[in-house]
Length: 350
Ligand SMILES: NC(=O)c1ccc[n+]([C@@H]2O[C@H](COP(=O)([O-])OP(=O)(O)OC[C@H]3O[C@@H](n4cnc5c(N)ncnc54)[C@H](O)[C@@H]3O)[C@@H](O)[C@H]2O)c1
Image (tube, rainbow, N blue to C red; front, side, top):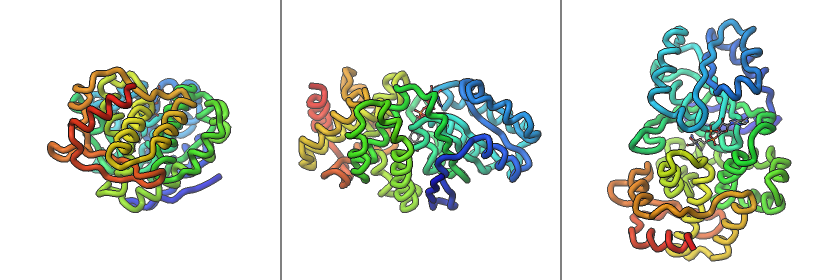
């Protein structure tokens, strides 16, 4: 088992290689009540009820599958159920699922009684390497993705690698997009490892190492800048454009797939504004395609621009991006003009 420490508003550990049944048991021993959030698929496939049943102090709440669960209507039902369960400040929430469930569960915990303890048990690669670590929690709304949220760190992140066995190749690849992002901004060894895995199947064989290295970077960055005053923004490489695509598709495409296209956009923008070498952009494309990730879109540019303006990273009317000077060397791009963005979009679409 491996552990990584994160220093945020409190210190906590990410544990890699645990068994979720033991975690449920341990957490239920240290709180009077536990409130467990998960999807029907995870409940059925991993027999959650069988493990929760002997725990007399647990309540199970089933959330809808996918991005749709990050919605105020779902949150309202969770608050209602928390009230009915009599959840107090000494009780805890456990979110078991992909990034959508850990984002939603973390936000439910952040807002209940002004913040109760929560634990994350991520079940997708995206949630393991990214969403469950770092304390960003939140929901979507008609005005944009993740615009409503809170920084509220979990008390523990417990990664049971067995969950990956049922994850589709599509979802595994979506998680790899975030790993590739980390490779370009901070840890080039991730790119080398992935270059040596020709297929998604092969990448699954090195999942534990990818997870460990990606979380190590995220933990370092979050520990230095928990509330994203500057450094943490590097983790948003590829995300400004990615979020716009995700929102435009009405969350039809996976977050990681949208980020994949966003990474190519950010790399092309870096060629134009920072002199990033073309061969690094080629490496973005080849690595992403190696794992069947999309590298362009045929959506018109104007609506994407409009959506980028509502991104969290926008400041007033100016659009901001994270670019790359070279691998491992990110750079903040402020006030990027619409003309440059349109030209970049055209170049990436060829
Ligand atoms: N808070 C953060 O810092 C942060 C960082 C990155 C991403 N995110 C958020 O995470 C979400 C994307 O994460 P995601 O891709 O995990 O989304 P998700 O939770 O929607 O999961 C994707 C799909 O995988 C399925 N699934 C989950 N676990 C499974 C398993 N073990 N076996 C088979 N199928 C399984 C789900 O049912 C769903 O259909 C987005 O909402 C994104 O905004 C948050």
